Length: 179
Image: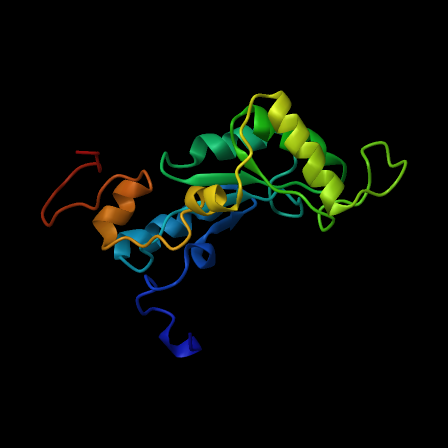
């Protein structure tokens, strides 16, 4: 998209292009505004990335606050770095959420005795998920979970599918409420 038409309709973009890669819960507030205007008619896919330096710190408190702030229709994934990858991903799995991992997040075992490959990290989380009774999605299921290729017809449908209150009707006063 050209820099000059950044306010044009973005409903033709892929969901991954407009996902909320947020370090804090407040950072995803821009997404509902775009949805309310009808500029972004796609599923809300959120990833919590606590990297410090102005973003959330990697604590269970911040993690659960982010999850609590996510709208009911959003797909939430958790990501962590370095020695926090395993414990935070274990908590996310226990909470029924999605996780990601790989050597871009950490290359060390938790005790730093040796480096881990991305394959070893994925195998570790698959084992933990199965031990927690969680199903691990295959590629087709992952595309369905992340709603790849899904587009909504207008702002009203987008807000409803993503778990937000509807836009006010002309002349309507008071707080927004689900109907």
